[in-house]
Length: 287
Image (cartoon, rainbow, N blue to C red; front, side, top):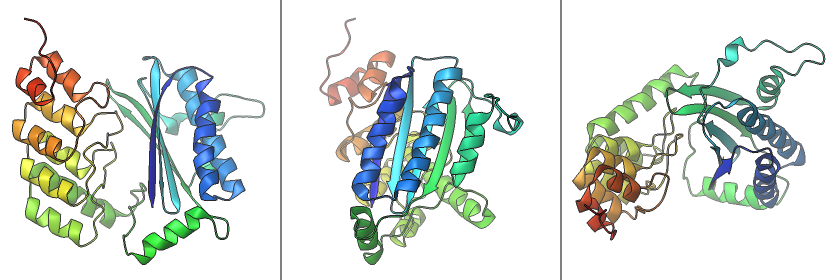
């Protein structure tokens, strides 16, 4: 079972309770135990509030939540400059500075902070889920396990062997090593495996111009619409790189040229790639 949702929100205090209610509705519908829902609500509140208070640039931010079997990962991405979480001191009695980081670290099973130059900052929070007896989430998770669909590796990269293996898989995608990569996928590697920046195997193959790899991964269930942590989608990246074969492969796989911001169509207009606009059924900009 995997449920994903992306929310593009204004950097406004009113967005925090709205985001909480949306995610809590999904958790409640699945039957996640109440104490865990409470922890996730508090983690999410602190992460979003941190964006609203401290993000220096941009009027919007993104909350991406993924529920995979018994694991929930929340990523809050903004356009600010980020901060060094390791330098945030434990707050003293009554102090507010550093309180949010302390709460997130206490309640989450794993926390990751990252800053991407010119592209914003990321807070990623992971929480293990427990379901009430005979709940919808429990039944769906058990059904998936019975079908042998495997599980997505945790975002915790403390296992050096797992990290080395994942790095090899991403390098194969960048190099277009279709045969070996497909063999790993067919042996159980999650086809939508993503690195620390949210780039999937398909995203890396597309960006590096490997149309055959893109087609092979898409044929095995890779999502051509999945964005990375900066909101970039494979099709827009292929248009930017002017990789015509990859653009065609992604369109054949069902990628939407009008999805995302900027979309593939927006990118084609921006750089004057009129041939792609024709493929997308869009009018070329006036000369």
